[in-house]
Image 1 (tube, rainbow, N blue to C red):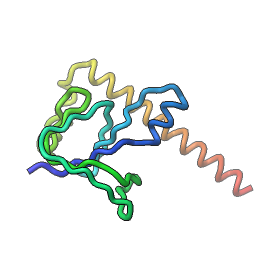
Image 2 (image 1 turned 45 degrees about the vertical axis):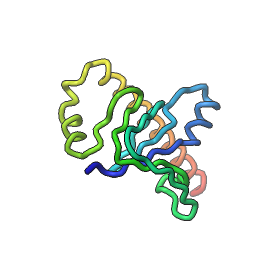
Image 3 (image 1 turned 180 degrees about the vertical axis):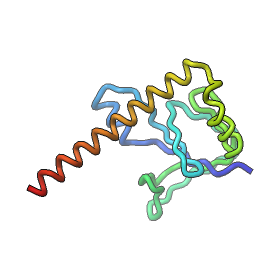
Length: 130
């Protein structure tokens, strides 16, 4: 049986897109400790809408969709069980170069944003310690 996938809308990304004129994916799909991001999500099979203000997800989301069904992200099916996901991860060198470049670009953007956060944190720490 597939693991539960939790899908929610990331309001912080919506706000950042509006502020910066970007078009980053606003949907977050959480499953098995991993996050995947998409512009469009299609769920085939049963799903449940959950509102849990007293026990939000680790990211802070209080409303999400739970499913064990098949999911398509941006028109492409994703593997929901860990075995299939490992096959994809281990065969990344066999993916079309266009997809790999897109993944590399997304990773570079993600790492640059993390680097900026760390730099800002270091600046703040230096200011506070002086």
